[in-house]
Image (cartoon, rainbow, N blue to C red; front, side, top):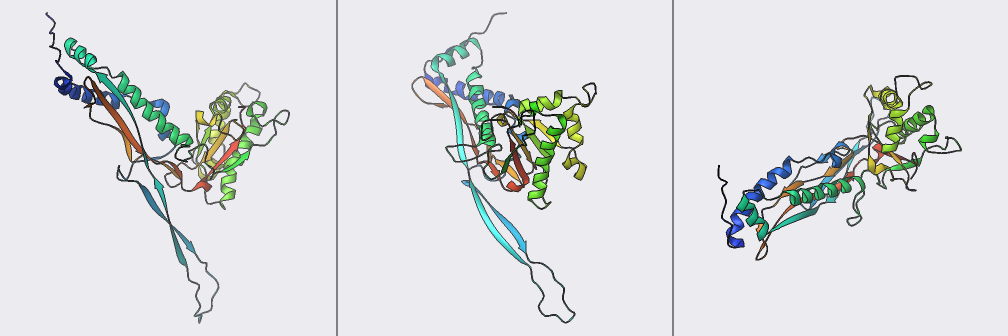
Length: 322
């Protein structure tokens, strides 16, 4: 069978319809690609509500004040309750990345019947996802945003120096001492909020997570490791009957004030925190940018991670070495 050879385009303008059709194919392949490494949605609730082009979001809070008291049957001074209202705003910003082709690439693609390479598009798309993940986890200094692992609104402590040689690191602690560190952090959220809030999620530096998984109970000949035991035996599970969600998070490896490992306990709920993503990654139409060049891009709009109820979270530092 003879191979069909396509006629190359004479100029960039003639090639533009081909670029348009190829751009749409590449867009489809971009959205078929998955980026499990940047799975910020597993740790921060992602909120996509609202208009994609809004400058930000505004929300209102309501609190109730007042209390009951003893009264007589003829009382005319009943204590009345009152509601106080407040509002807050959070701004959005746009990010983007692009890729380009030249006339030579387009003509060779048409000549040999080979689709335009999607490598550049994948790279740009991955750059956007990487930036969204970084914003979700640690915020942006340019925008003065903090993230999941470094918010100044969250209470912070160093774990007890009860390990060998007065060390705080889990590698120098016994199983019981490690469990005490975790339960102390979970319990601090209950104490600090007068038993109102609790933490249903625990995020650990990868080194600390692996240590829990590798430590076996008893004299080392048991079949239950420390991680399995912790999921079922902690103050949150004892109080609610629900299993504690424990996952590793690489951004915690050096998140402490001294560059060591940080542990995060929090209630993973949109009411507590949210990652604003009013416009998830969106691919733009290709366009001719010069005599022999074309370009295409992708954009997204985000407001970063917003902690709305910081009392439902707490940090504990120095569980692993820097």
